[in-house]
Image 1 (cartoon, rainbow, N blue to C red):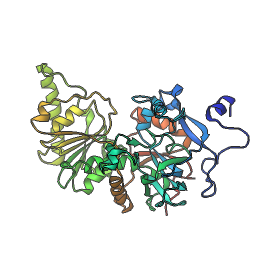
Image 2 (image 1 turned 90 degrees about the vertical axis):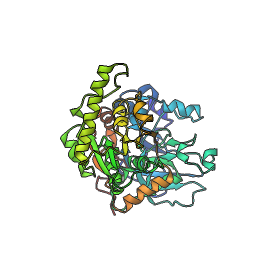
Image 3 (image 1 turned 90 degrees about the horizontal axis):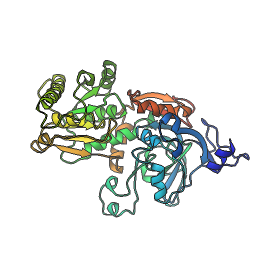
Image 4 (image 1 turned 60 degrees about the vertical axis):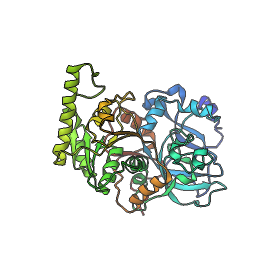
Length: 426
């Protein structure tokens, strides 16, 4: 370890090495330092270089927190954003709240073993095998104290993105309410794969009264072969709905159909994406509307009737929102959790207010939704859609690939404490 890195991480080189990756210390014994994939402000940009392996101090926990030895960690798009430092510099944001660390350890999906519990924690014991859900909030927040949805509270955060010491370290710090039992029929890698995307999808489809998914609904799922899309199609199908995926080629279409989609639309068959022409551009409007109608007809052809989607499951954002609003049925809902193609979405309000459609933002999960989703996992009704298992050292490049849109088959998982992709199933 160089003198520079020793100074930056406050690590002495005098025999204070952390436990080697792929190994665990004795149960309940927490080393002072740990390996982690770390983002720093002077590396913001391409995730392939923003993430670097470092040794950092193992985080301490508060009275209501738990320390988990991470066996495997899921890769999600939120830490592409964290690595870029855009749209939010999470390190600076936390420092403004009074936190002192000048680095970010990301990762919002973890499977692992409880190694330490805070003094107020009674429902969790050292040695339990768990997964984490991503919803974090201050239990003393006035919004939470009033019994309102904590994921809408001013203090609500996403673990491992807004918070530090996520799952890309050998140990991760979580609030005790975030913990869910690991499905024993899953490996560590499988268990780490779907929780963030699965609980996010569950909230999107079941969390908005008046537009919850129900039997017979057509549900249009953007990115149907990815981590979010494969979970959304399964959750919709379990409710008796009819999920239709949007993908970019035949191979991705076949993959989406493995996870519940009744068919798939190839978005490359259409060219009307992005911000549509303004209303006073009659020729441009006519051309764009023809493209959107053709897209809608492709959906009808798959469904076998002229039935528009009751729910459009959105996350690309800028490129797709205008079409999503256009094809959504009257009284239906476009629900969105991200903006992977851009944040500047445009909506033609004529198709929004006159047909009384809902454009609903959705973020994270609350405890009830996370538990409901995990119950489906425990019952064997959800496939984790595990696409790739990677090594700890490949976390940076995995985020770079995701940022370039190259990882679109299920979920990607990195091994930390788990010795192999097949370990952990009981």
